[in-house]
Amino acid sequence: MIRLQDRKLRNKHGGRRRSDNKELTGAPRSAHVKRTAQESFSPEAFILRRSMPWTDGAAGGLNFVAFGKSFDAFEAQLKRMVGAEDDITDALFKFTRPVTGSYFWCPPVAKGRLDLRALAF
Ligand code: HEM
Image (cartoon, rainbow, N blue to C red; front, side):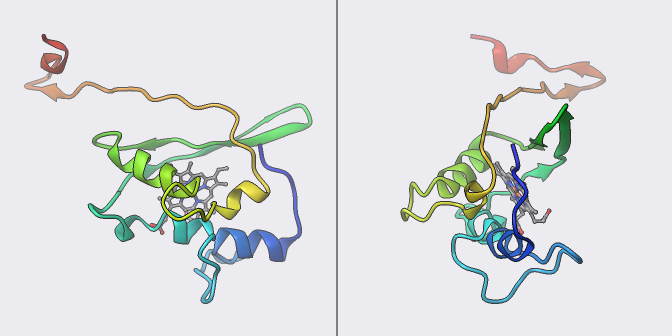
């Protein structure tokens, strides 16, 4: 759930300028785009993000939605966001609150059919 906050603070903690999405030079190490910079992980932690804002009465927030070829990239990014590597917590948590989360597995398709071999024991 996202609480509204001073624009300067949101820019600083996100690491990008809200008006044009330009990455800020000199953003702190806790800035979200620094924490999650996908090419800075080893191996690189690329995901395809397709988040959706939501509202319910006066409440609102963001459903963070992303696709990946495995859970590894998510795990690596989330670990860094919570400061597990270096005790630096993602500054996004200064004005957002994680509420819940789920992982879903989409089976691949081979020759036009669902390939469920990964489920075989
Ligand atoms: C309330 C939750 C979140 C908000 C409001 C948020 C917001 C943002 C914003 C504004 C950007 C910069 C603009 C852009 O590149 O699209 C960004 C980048 C990014 N975020 Fe988030 N984000 C959230 C949660 C997450 C989570 C949970 C993850 C990872 C599991 C994540 C991963 C990323 C990545 C990978 C980037 C691009 C970094 C790069 O390679 O430049 N975000 N996010």
